[in-house]
Image 1 (cartoon, rainbow, N blue to C red):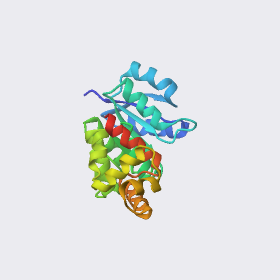
Image 2: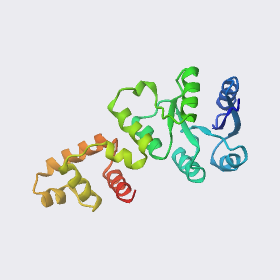
Image 3: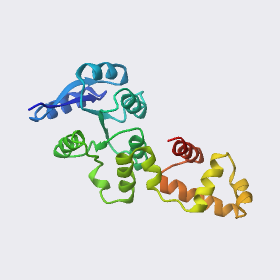
Image 4: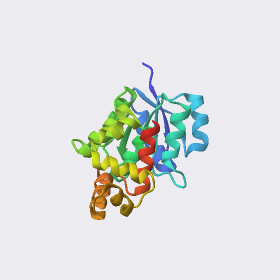
Length: 217
């Protein structure tokens, strides 16, 4: 039986060696190469041709999202699984948007980690079990299955919220939006708050960027 080849990206040596041992004990999995970051990862990807990349999202001095995007651009068929200690839901959402197929909490049991690797390698999408059944998990899973456009369309916006998003994208302030739509400034603020809640965003700039991504997708 051919083993599932894994590239492990982890800059903590103890974790890197420990995870490698645990994975290599499995009859169907093997860590084909290890890396501390993006510098050597692309080279090792070409050499060992892994089916799965298991990477720490919190790499020191490197942007994990940039690494995911670079790997997916160079090797579209590779499956990427992120690891994190206690990431916010918004962080996991950004990781999904970058192209990842799964996420594992570092507090997960070994069985869950191994199971996630196997499922993702088989084409499934996997998120942390603590998120199971939540509204957020449904949105993120939709994004995993359908890509960036799926993420945006999975979140239902009212017609007024769509109007506000369009005007934010034009660079208008709350006061200007209120005047354009003939509504109170307080109402605009309420719409902006609801939009950020629905899309797990933190600023007007992120709303504008997401709207442009959807338009250009």
